[in-house]
Length: 95
Image (tube, rainbow, N blue to C red):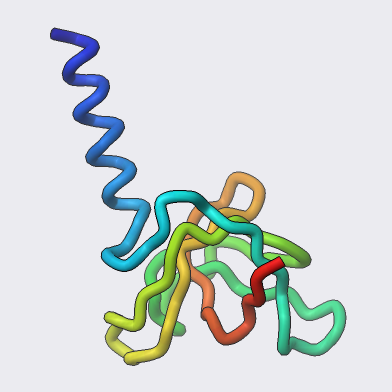
């Protein structure tokens, strides 16, 4: 019973991390299109006015992208170090 609950919880958490059109496997992306040395902000929500919770300085794991956002711009679910949040797709390029 406990194992079944743990498995269900893990599946639910994974579904939250991956937007509708996301890939199953995360991919490594690098910063692109920003001035040298300028980090890319990681936001709590896919919105430019959302709280900044971290930065990407070189590379990040991308779990999927969506343009189903209030601003209609494309945002990607990213993980850099221990920070998990959202970053603008415009500034990310696949490795």
